[in-house]
Amino acid sequence: MAILMPKKVKHRKWHRSKSKGLSTRGTELDFGSFGLVAMETLWITARQIEAARRAIIRYLKKGGKLWVRIFPDKPVTKKGTEVPMGGGKGSVDHYVFPIKPGRIIFELDGVKEETAKEAFRKASDKLPIKTKFIKK
Image (cartoon, rainbow, N blue to C red; front, side, top):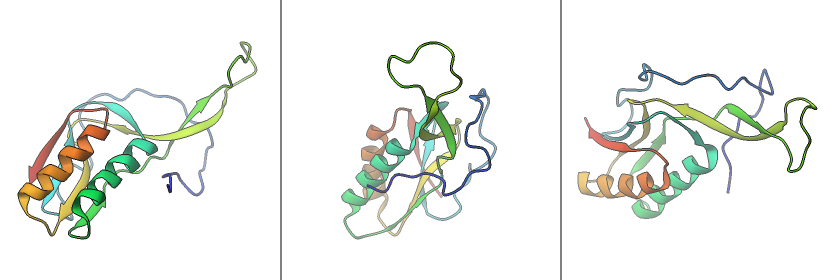
């Protein structure tokens, strides 16, 4: 399983920051005819993106083309178990993508609408947020 993560980063550890409001970027279908849009605000991990991608690919078998419109580049740190208070920030554990409502997660082309709907439904089951199916 090729987990999604940046090859090189400018800053190894980031602040947590607040995710509020609607997405202003990645809200239009740019590549495919069908899309899966986020309806909630949450951090989506690289593992969740990969699981959803695999669910779509497995359902489609060999037909269609899939675009993943998000990339997890935000590092999330974690301290080891039973580590006492203090001692600084923990090491990077995994990467996430902070998603906002309106953001397109996946795009699909080259398949029928029913097929795309079912593929995105399967992918949606792997994601921790409510999603919506859209078409051009």
